[in-house]
Figure 1: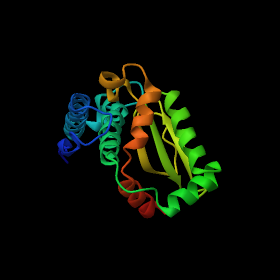
Figure 2: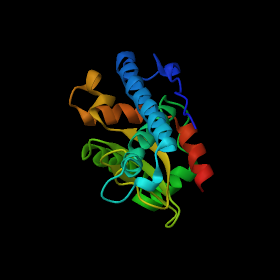
Figure 3: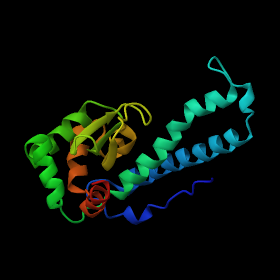
Amino acid sequence: MTKEIRNFKHLLGKVDGISDPQLEAHFTLYEGYVKKLNEIEEKLEKTDKALTNYSFGEFAELKRRFSVPYMGTFLHEMYFDNLISQGKPSHKFEELAVKSFGSFDSWKADVKATGLGVPGWVVTCYDTFSEKILNLQLMEHHIGFVVNQVPILVLDTWEHAFFLDQKTNRGGYIDVFFKNINWDVVNARLAKAV
């Protein structure tokens, strides 16, 4: 199935503290993931599965790499979707932040500390096992995602997300991100997860 590239140009001029050139560069990177995902899926359909094994095989190698563009595509889409300041945290989100971290501010501090410690992703997830939220640190798109988790807020902490505007100031970028969370999107994700 071919994945369509989504258009996020509606964000231009509307994200406080993230410039249009920064966003446009980020959109281009996202488009590359979608194209690579489609390329791998097409090759997987045509590759002879009978010739694969653990040591080597084109099918096995394509399967091993599939999650990189897949996660790169969908994490970027979730990130762009939860960008643009809108709404406020729902009562349920605030309740879970207190249950999981002691307070909303402690959740926020945990997101920032998690983001400062990784050139990758911070994903606030609803844990279907504990019925709490937690902040996952993904070193790469496809490494570190834990079972029983439903993503509800996605923060891209790779330098490509902020370098044009913030240079190496990842902490400043995270502060800008907090000002631009689309809580309507986050609240809807949480309501669906719960």
